[in-house]
Image (cartoon, rainbow, N blue to C red):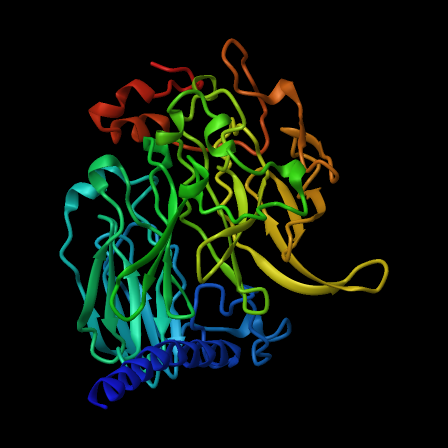
Length: 440
């Protein structure tokens, strides 16, 4: 009888945990729909970055004046929007990744602040600038309490008590000693904290990882390059669009073992469709920058992925820029909408403005390419994008290959090359590029 009771008690505990996480996720979703809150980087799971408030409009915006200001004391780039939850504002800075909680009823009062200790050596390998893209909020369930989740440049993730700022747990995601740093805003879905990585310029192999929001325990990790089992490709990966490519390409589209330093980090933005149980994001540029050193399509860098949040398995992957020559890291935001097609049928869409100058719209249930239009006619690296194959038609005049001087390239990478190269560790010096993309 005692064994039976113990079994029943254990079953109760195991069944309560996912229910609690699901309840908290529903609460987070509800908070995101309130115009009083901004609880995740894109405001809500659709990542529409839109507020329906009307107090400020086209007629009175000219009359706005500064009511108050707050200095973070940090001069490097700030790329993360503050979070607002139930009258409290949470602000995060670039390195050294300080976090402040303010009471919006009295914004001159700091409720708490977190100034973490981390290894300053990460500054030497971070690209580009020491930015951070923001915070995540978790409303809490039985345990732990409501959390603020943040990333540190040196590769750690921290979970802080949203009320007190006290550290609840800390986890290492990346190793800055090999050039892998963290600048991404965490993203919380169904009790999992999603975190990408940075450092493709230094030959880091990119991945996205899911951690248990309660403990920081790793649940799964999916890479952008390498064997299928590392990429977590589902059995029916790209089944609706086999022409995008399916199995084995994370190896065969690279020369030798180049995939091990292939880049494809993701440090940008996520979106999530609860109905499909898929989350969406883009992978970054391949490495090294010099395209001559990595023949092939270099899959699955520069790719829009749709992955199952529970398992991490990729249901589809569409590579927008095969064999990227220009550093068009494809990590821009993913906007989810529901719209009717020309036949009046409702479709679940994903729209992504890419750094290659093309705005892509996909059916987010299966990856079908619906449209691919240039942002502006000055975009010249591609002539067109074929909607059937999904492939871009390159204009060779604007390539960056060896023994060719490409000029007036649009879009172009506006990086300070000397500054970038000074940050490269000696072991990666053989991948350094000259100002015109030549190896040296």
